[in-house]
Length: 166
Image (cartoon, rainbow, N blue to C red):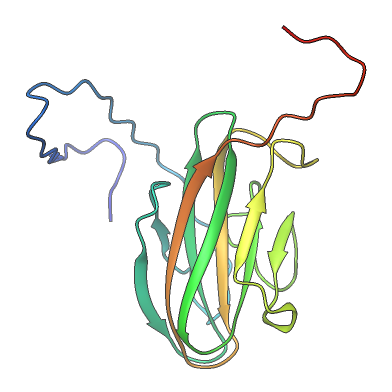
């Protein structure tokens, strides 16, 4: 595990036939994980995801959680989607609780297997919407074989009848 005050090397790979130079910033933030046990009796890992349609695949045993984090850097809508090969899953999404679960503490959005949904949509108009980090909890109701992805999109603009735009 990483510790503040130590020196670490970070490698970056950016392959492209079009660009030879890339400008980017790497930001590292240390966060103290909760000391209290979480689902499964230990402090679970949080897997970082990109918001570019890339699927992250894994399997899970029944009655376990997997946690992910994704960044919402701009005023766009965020969609989290599960592609389930086998099993049933619930999803919980929060921008305040690092470990969203069925307790629903800090959970603003949820997708339950009972409802047949495998997708969460966070719209700019939603009351809990804000830029920054969103935490995803996936709960396996049964053995679960799945992929998870996140992507950004723009909301449709609402135009009022009789108003002038331009």
